Length: 429
Ligand code: ACO
View (cartoon, rainbow, N blue to C red):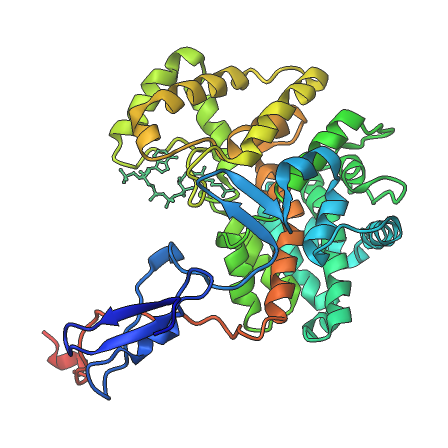
């Protein structure tokens, strides 16, 4: 009997099976041999929402949800937040190692010089309705980019893959800023290659006439981008891998990931946090709202609280909370901060939240900071999609090099009617 194995006894047949355990998991396919007879398909697992299923082996991001740990390629998020910048972190996530100075310079130059978009993209974006949501515009335009770069279909060509990755990381800021400018009827601002990644994004967003990038805000945005760069197999990353497994080009797969991120339970959560804080309105109303959450039977949620993986304080939320003061010093204190702080204080002491291990997640404070920086709520999911692009693409790149991976195709438990003959319409009663 192998030391790392599981013995399963099938009570229906009395047979026992040895299933190897590797990396704390068993292979779902190993269960297939558990059958009553030769016609039996074999045992499957039922795991809606993949709450206990590893869909891949990955070397990118490590999370220990109980301890509140997040590492990219082995480096703690706290250290990267303190010492690194977004472009360096993005390089690390994609390549697996921190860059040397020469590697960093070449990488930064690649990304900077790909920020410009084809002039036709402007026409495309200009044709959206005046009040189009920027996330919808971003998603559609990223999908449309696949038609500008048809060579991106050659996904097994590693060099070509890298080229598209550079393009996407670079152009996301331009598309995001264009989407915003369109939504408020301002002319598009072209990228300025003399600025850094976040500084350039800020000037494309906010420049009207002469614009000076504020270094505190640039650094705050850079930090937020580091914190959002990857988060292993969440909903949007699984969408990226799932759609990418059909071997479609990365622009189309990334559009699917953006769509997944758009949902209020994922990247749309920080927008919902602000709406919730605005609705609560004042510190005094917090106890009433918390009561409503607890008695709603799961219908009203405390947005920005809870996480599928973190059953402790989200380490990203801690870093964001510390950084908030620097932004408020420049832009003025967001009055909703007091409501948020009171909400956190009460929730963390409340039996309902403690028992369910519901702590603030990354979205609880990020919206307040983005709002203070001048971003409208509709831009919040877009601000998540920009830095997550490197995570999505790195996961996609890893998947394509993984011999274990095939086109994603889960199974189902069929509970519908048994096979039956067709009945013509005049005989149906
Ligand atoms: N407020 C109140 N109750 C909650 C919350 C919340 N935010 N989150 C979970 N619960 C309760 C559920 O009602 C459930 O209670 P029950 O056991 O009495 O039925 C219990 O906690 C477990 O909840 P699940 O929905 O099973 O937890 P799951 O891991 O599936 O959900 C999720 C995680 C979707 C993030 C959830 O906590 C949530 O909806 N949070 C609010 C939305 C949010 O902030 N999303 C951002 C996530 S971070 C990100 O995507 C970047």
